[in-house]
Amino acid sequence: MKKSFSWLLAVVAAGVVSLTGCKSFDEYQADRLASAVAHFERSQYSDIPEDKVLTLNECFALAMANNLQLKVAGLEERVSREMRTYEILGMLPELTVSDNLTRRDNTPASSSRQLDGYGPGTYSYSQSQDRTVNYLNIDLALSVVDFGLAFFNTCQANDRMLLRQQHTRRAEQNLVLETVRLYFQVAAAQRAINITTRLLDECKNRYELIERMGAAGEITPFRAFDEAKRFIEMERRLTNYIRTYENSCVELRALLGLYPNAKIKVDDSLLDTIPEFTFPEMELMEQIALMKRPELFQIDMQKHINILECRKTIVSMFPNVRMFIDFTNSNNSFLYHNSWIELGIRAAYNLLTLPRQISRYMAYSAQVDAEEYRAYAQAIAIMAQVRIAHANLMATRERLDIDIRASDIFSRHLAAAEESSRISGELSQLELAHMRLETAEKQIEKYLSIGNYYVSYYRVLNALGIENLHETTVAGLRAQLEAERERAAEELARARAEYEAAERERAAAEEDEASEEDDDDEAADRSETSAAAPDAPEIPADPTVK
Image: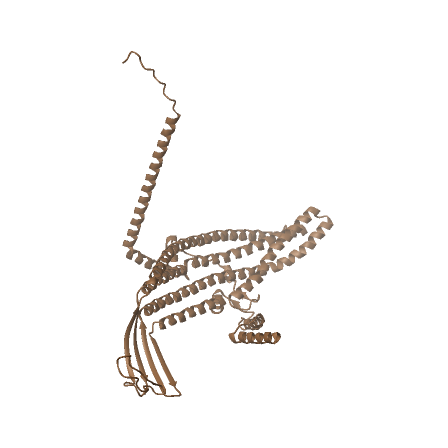
């Protein structure tokens, strides 16, 4: 009996689990397996021809069209847009339509009797309702408080949608910077492969030459060891350049939303030219960053969301006034009127929620102040990022000039050595091989520096939050800043005056505190001096003086 009962409980539990939609780990594992196969096959759909050489602009276009993280940001922006529509529809009044149909199996009759002492006995039974009754009710109601809350919810949903747009915009800017970084890594690695493939083969041949010269006694064992060590170290450095090529290709393809293999080629002709970038003055760049960075827009929008939350709290403090209009239709034949309309207003006020709402208002008001300071802190950090990015570009340019000069010097000496008629013998060929390897390394370092120079420029654009620094763009931004400075001249002057007054008060308070400390120190010194002085000798009284 117990086993039968346990089996019945197990069956009931299994039925409840299946009806409520609970999933077991095995089901999740099966879903994960299906997703793994589907995602792998889907990743094979979009690809580029193997002989396709991508330019930087083509990589930008592919990244914007196929990057999966950017698509996720776009879908989240779409969700926020739909949530705004949802909040807008929340401002509509309540419209309720109900239809009630009842059927009795007998006549709904009733009787009544008068109160004791006020009349004769009971009355006979009477009927005031049909057996089948149908009530149709249409109720239109509007709550003033709910309408106000729905209005502010709509404003907040609109701010959240704009906030998601700024998040997507910043994701696009970071995607551009990351694309540039990986693009020039692949380009420099391609150049390194083209330069070092033949030289690495020569290195392997030089090992045999060193062994043969050491065996013949042309060089000492110590010289043979040093020569082999030099070639091994150079081979290791050149091989590292090639080793990074495949990793960079995989990262670039994943960033472009393609299957992450190493089959990608980029146009490395940009490494043959050294661009000249021009920048406005540093103060203007800092102001441009403060005007264009999406993070500051997000803080401003979050601040406005908190302000609207304060206003919602104030609305919640008012009585809940509800206005309604009610239409009713009944087919009861005993009624004098079968249709009627009701108009009314209801008001309710829960006084005990008032302290709670006041506390909520104070909390969000403090949050608004926190957002103010957060915006200022973020502004300081962004100005620091602009200066650091510009300093990094200047340092990269200096490193590039050094690498260009070193590459030119090594190339000239190598050309002179190859043209010299005095080069003869295996030892001279060994030294010439060293010169070729070192010159190739300097050329690769030059290409890497050129790529880093491009990346540094785009990092400055990323710190500024803009797409370019054309003259027209800078001129337009400068005009906007000057117009805003003229408009807010009085506010800026008043803010500076308040700051200077506060600083004077603080300085005066510090001086007063310092003077009080000095007085206390002097008093302490006097007390210590008096305590340390010897007691005066007692003078005996003169007996002749009365």
